[in-house]
Image (cartoon, rainbow, N blue to C red; front, top):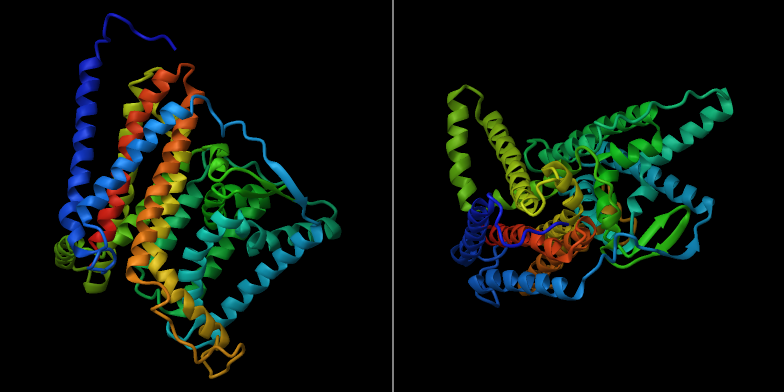
Length: 481
């Protein structure tokens, strides 16, 4: 890239002012947790380290990581990665796992309708909100794209296609998946799921949840029938795309009926951003952020005011609450999107010839480890405790007094991990996730810019974004009552 020498470009002063504004925002982000952390992480009031020190330590770790990347990472390492094949996976095993996933889905739906209609006695809500929503992202990180193998919609769709080919012999070719549609169906689907989890008044009703699951099933079958099973599952299936993104961070890659080994996090560099990808990652981070924000006193004040205003419009108390939380959810997603795009605008000052949209798509994969870090940090306590309920609920799935596995009388052990232990998991996860995001962004910059100097300079802005995201996450956790 051509670099200016003696003369400074006309926009240099404006760029310095923008950089100063971002640095001020970083300083505010670092100062913000100081008072908020007095509340304690997720209701834990005796922290082993002062809150202000956590915020500064996290920022310092990221700055040190940034300097280390600039010095020790002079060329891309993950962009042209070669994976090592470990062993093949027979087709029969793939078919068996798919059938198992479909059977588990049918059993879950039967339990939802046939069991006790309370969340404490019915397996379905805990299965969905604890094991599926929180557990599978961690499983995807450790073992790769497990959901794709057990995806019941994909399994049924593939069997249905195989049967039609054998019976009719003239199966019409699926439509080409519209390029402009991209990941937008997945972004909408994840937003809708989180709306049900956080806002829907009947989210604790197993039958209501089962009806929504069946409605989602219909959408999946329609999408697969129109655009083909694989095309829809990779782009339109909300959960298939969601868990697939997290699986890119795993050292294990299940593809082409074989298992491959690669460096952790490196698979994210292979993400091909399409329309809706940036929105999807903003949704993934924004929805988790909103869940944490609703536990703090600031949202209590805001929501109380909004609920009163909507009540004045004649919506009624319950509807006013749902509308208020919906507005808050969408606002948080837009806030995360805006923060990322602000950083991208800063990156663009290094090379104005690249459009902001191009750069946003180029660096969006660096948000994947951040999204996973937000999920683990925010929900680890839920999984650590409520996840244990799977044992006694599965032993008595219908709530009729049965004891299939001898665990019906077991209880949640709240002492297996201390509050301090959970605190350490949350903070370490956030720091590691954002450091991984920095590494992914740095590696991509080494490809986009021929000269290492502008590549490193462009990452000042991504460093600012990562620091802001880290401190924002710490503040969200600490602000919980």
